[in-house]
Length: 329
Image 1 (cartoon, rainbow, N blue to C red):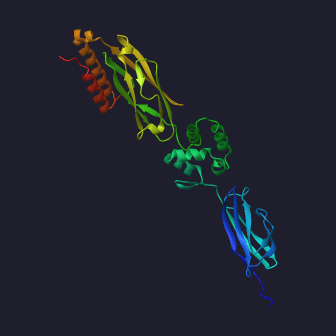
Image 2: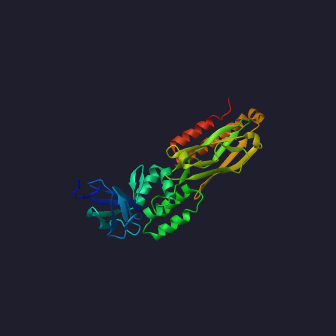
Image 3: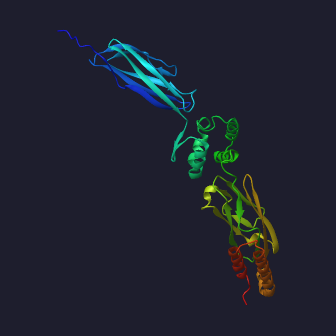
């Protein structure tokens, strides 16, 4: 018996239509078989130089053909069309292909991001994720393709040890955010102390989102900080309490002077500190003098309030603290 059935080609795809990110390489495949499911041989070729085939000849009943499209020289919006030609002992076919080129992007927790505006939004919402993208190989190709000035800034900042600081400076340099400014609730600190150590705090406020590294220091041995380094993610909202201990044992009797410095890369805040240490016997012998000192401090506090140097809440807080220092009668 003779089998006179004429075989014909089967292609797993009628045509190829793909979207490729600008600057990247896309890989895919399709299958060539025939109606008789018998081994066959043939050759394949591409009509366009950007779509290449891993193998140009095949043999078998089912043949997987791998192809690669290189969009390295193409821009967003480009379209490439062509054909893959198949010639075999089971017949010939042409498979058309269309390739659409889109802008490079990153898939993030906010979806696709393709430009610096979207990247800035990601940094605002998830600094850690933005930091990883900032250090990644494709950042420059995705976000800085046509801006040579931004590329120079980016490459220079990548040399920084701190990726977070580099990212902060980059966003400032390209005008996507401004520098963080810090503020404290007290301009100076004055204390009347005896023999007991006590705690106090400064409330630190930052004016916006972003990365900041803060160093807190002093030139006074009698001031001890709970935390000498503060980062932006330590803040609850936009505020952070800087707590510190004042130790009279490290003060001499009389007036003791020092400073607290709050420093960032771009800002220094200096707060003068004055502590007057009394002997217990001094307090017992001259309560009148202590009362006069407290009254004088209360008057200065009231004057600051009247001159709008402090608000009502700070005025009341300081007045309460001073009144507690009045000697008992």
